[in-house]
Image (cartoon, rainbow, N blue to C red):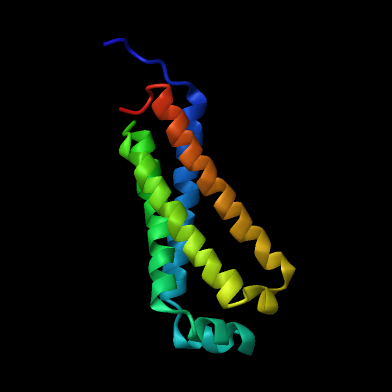
Length: 142
């Protein structure tokens, strides 16, 4: 079998995206680990958002961030299964953002700027799925 040359940018991007998703895991643990004192320090509108956060949205959040981490690890390991995991992560992100922006109406609490991060997260997740697919076509993932 012919040895495939993988460009440096692949490793850099996959590594940076792993760090990005690890930051997402940190955000997840900050969310689930919010103490009563921390909640009490939030403005009332933010406390209400936390109070009505459903389990299914929390599960979608977990799938999104942990899927992103494992998908990026799969990229770094050069495994085709990374694409499947990254697609699952993207689905988790879409579900989570649907809850946040449409159901919970987070923009009512945080303003229009609350749309920036969800859009960025979705764009990055779509990019990662594209990158995995591109890498499979180039035979970088096996």
